[in-house]
Length: 416
Ligand SMILES: *[C@@H]1O[C@H](CO)[C@@H](O)[C@H](O)[C@H]1NC(C)=O
Ligand SMILES: *[C@@H]1O[C@H](CO)[C@@H](O)[C@H](O)[C@H]1NC(C)=O
Ligand SMILES: *[C@@H]1O[C@H](CO)[C@@H](O)[C@H](O)[C@H]1NC(C)=O
Image (cartoon, rainbow, N blue to C red; front, side, top):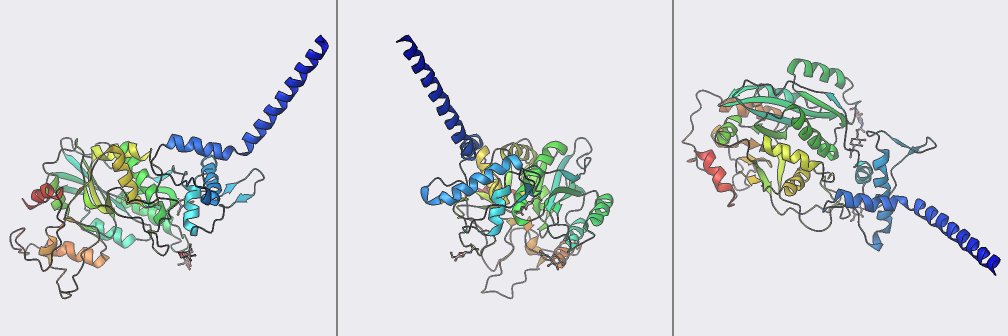
């Protein structure tokens, strides 16, 4: 009797052990999925690329592999498996190539800095600093040159000390400009205005540029009172910006630009801005500023840096920043002086003189200009013989004001 009970006990024990082993093996083989759920919880963002429906089964598999890459992230190098074979991103017919690549690599978000300007933000005490940061690509040397020689000059503008930086990554096609690294070496030596990071300078990596820049400001330029960030094909009227900032408190939140409300993700895969539904479900984007040019206080830049660490990367950099703004609960302010879509010539007045310098005198940022246009605009505006009617009394052949409550305060400031 006793012997039998002992036998029973041993049997049960063995069975239990076997069960445990089985469970363990089972768990191990589905671990990427477990990881995925853990990851989702930790990241805690509202916008997850993961679709949790049965019809999206293929997507699920694919995204769980994308998340696995978190552990294999090797600074954008090709991923290798244990046998040393190069792994390629999982194939999916649902998305164009760049999205597959993007999702595959989106957890690689820390890259080395190759060229730095550690002393950029040194300034005379008691002065306020406006840091002008310009997204450029190595190939766009002419755009950098014209900005340096015109609107983005360093020095004093009204009561602000202006400093200039270009934000660059590694050219995606290095054979297009074989001498790119020597060019940057000399450019950065001569002008001391180049920041270069070790990621490919592509449209979908602009968000990487954003987060690395915010981190750089936090680390190397915490004293900047104000930060302007824009593209290299803009004309910025820095005098107007300095006027506008004259009575702004850099310790307050400030985020001004051309604000876009209620934008919907573009679902046509022909567009440069195409965002598949699995990446951003139905619903509008958070309020964001057109990336062509916007202005913020140093205080806000710092807060955005901390927020950016908690938000999943999103391939459109200005929408990404909108997500960060949402996270810190800051509503950006729109300003009619920011023309991040350029000046639209009304079809009713095709002869309109868009190069009337008086027209530009009141603007702060004009986007999508050619190099000669930037030069011409700056030169005309700084012509000592330029005479314009009183500010604000100019006749306009078409309406371009956007009526919004939030703008009135800042418009008033500009006009006075
Ligand atoms: C783009 O969309 C069309 C129709 O929606 C589809 O037929 C085509 O395969 C898609 N192209 C890519 C590259 O996904
Ligand atoms: C890279 O640039 C070279 C030289 O301009 C050009 O011939 C080549 O097609 C480019 N490659 C890609 C992938 O764009
Ligand atoms: C972003 O940069 C990384 C590192 O250079 C590169 O591997 C990746 O392909 C780039 N991503 C996109 C979407 O261009």
